[in-house]
Image (cartoon, helix red, strand yellow):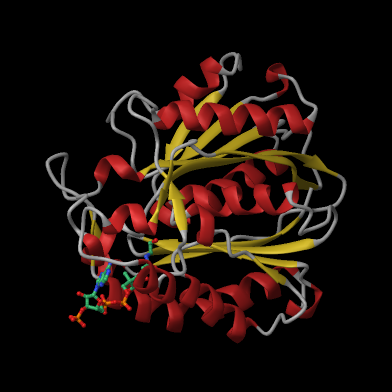
Length: 318
Ligand code: UT7
């Protein structure tokens, strides 16, 4: 057996994102359920979120984000031979989103599969994309995190409706002479699988908030440190920490334990809400757009959520 064209490393070449134009504020929600801006901001950190328009699909949002990342990478659709969509809110059981999105973007005959690791999905997909590039299974990979959580929410349930939102973020991964994506540290706590669920198509998203909160604030900082260690990076070298945008209190608790005081911490949840698998690429893409992080810096990304699943790795910012 001969394995051709093994790349020394993979790296993110570009990010892109898309958010629906429909902004929903906390005051908007307070008109239809027993909640208020003060509770939502102090307990979750969200000021406003985006919700897809009627008829705007998850595939639509994924296509927009993927197209922007592809354009920013300078590659053409022909250069991409693998498309992975991380999502847990696809309406259709089949077809998968990745084949549909690839076709819409003019990417001909790529490998195409979806990953469902909920809010950790983007980091799982990115780790898989990096391996595919480094082993020669793919030249360039389009990785998209996309969610339409609004279609799985009970809009009368204040414990979930104020938290979750819609959006998409994407990254193009290609070969590199030096590694730009560190080893992914991934794992799961299946004993807590009931803590976040959508049981079937007649059900809504349900969450035992406090169980997940305790798990996230006690279990995940060692994972963050392990991802740094496996990449040979000290937390003091990080330019950014971009965890899943679940809750501002969780983000800040993990950031404190990480001890990377110099790193810019993503707080995209304030204006984007919790967009599950989309939240990390969405946050990073928006931070790049606002000039909050610079190309060439190191970012630690850390996804966590239903399963319960988690995954994180250090990446070089494109
Ligand atoms: O993205 C996937 C991973 N998910 C997470 O990481 C989520 C982790 N969990 C959390 O972020 C938090 O647990 C929540 C934001 C979900 C909830 O915050 P909490 O501080 O744990 O609140 P709680 O569930 O303990 O509720 C406290 C109080 C309750 O009232 P009583 O029983 O003390 O009178 C709730 O009924 O707040 C009440 N409450 C609300 N009040 C106003 C719950 N939701 C709301 C609301 N507005 N939207």
